[in-house]
Image 1: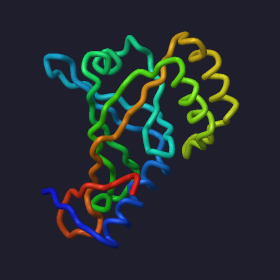
Image 2: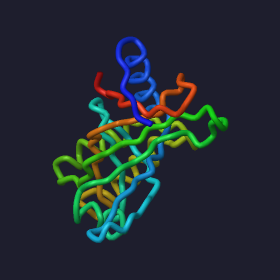
Image 3: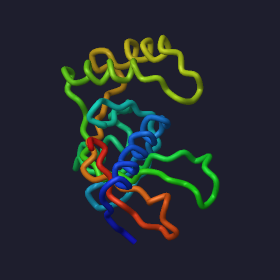
Image 4: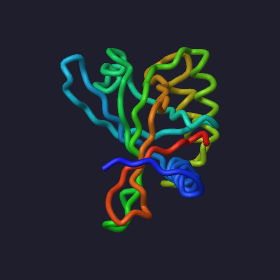
Length: 169
C-alpha cells in the first residue's frame, strides 16, 4: 500500500530518511541486465550534501556491467539489527553511473571524509585504499547513485503504508 502525507509528519519522515542514510554504511544495490535478469549486491557507500550515494567496485563485476548497460537500478538502506515489526528502511529508485576521473576526485574526498558507523574504520585505511586501488583508475572505480524517488514505510502507521520522502526537503 502506498500513500503520501503532508505537513509536520512528512518533515519528520524526511528527516528520518536522512538519518537512516547517515547511520548506515551498506546499501543493497539491485540492477538488471538487458534481458531483465536481476542481480543484487551490498556495497559500502558514502554520500554528499545532495544525498547522492557513492560506492567503489570493480568494473567487471556483474552489477557494474549491468550499470554500464542501462544505468538504472534500485537500492535499499536499512539496519538489519532492528526488532521485528519495528523496522524502517529506504527503498530508492535511482540512476547509477561510473564516474569520470574528474568526478572521481570529488567522490574520493567524500569517501575519505565519511565517518563509517561500523567497524571503527580508520580514515587512514580508507585513504590508503583510495590511493592504492582507485588513483588513475587502477583496479576499482567510483560509482554514483542519484536517487530519483525515495520511499519508506511510515513507522507511525498501524499498517504498512509506503510513503514518498524528500531527502533534500
